[in-house]
Amino acid sequence: MRTALLQFLRDETGATAIEYALLGVLVAVALAASFAVLGDSLSSLFGTGAGGPAAIIGEAADTL
Image 1 (cartoon, rainbow, N blue to C red):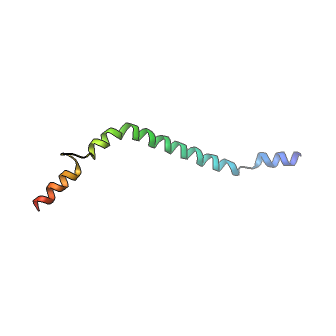
Image 2 (cartoon, one colour):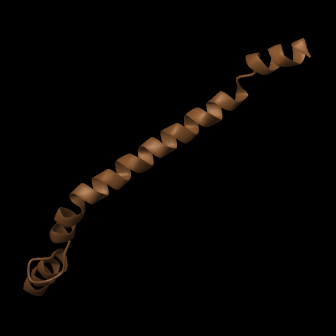
Image 3 (cartoon, rainbow, N blue to C red):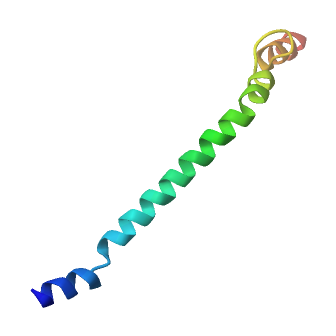
């Protein structure tokens, strides 16, 4: 029983999986926060309409 307990305490194979899980959660939280902060500005940057990229590219193609 004592050797099984000592072997269990020395086993570190699960620690790597937990570290990767925590790193994945950290990346997901960072992405969600950046999307929340930059969402509206990116929408207006790539938006449609008279000042959108599609309209500008269309106007440039018309001048060719």
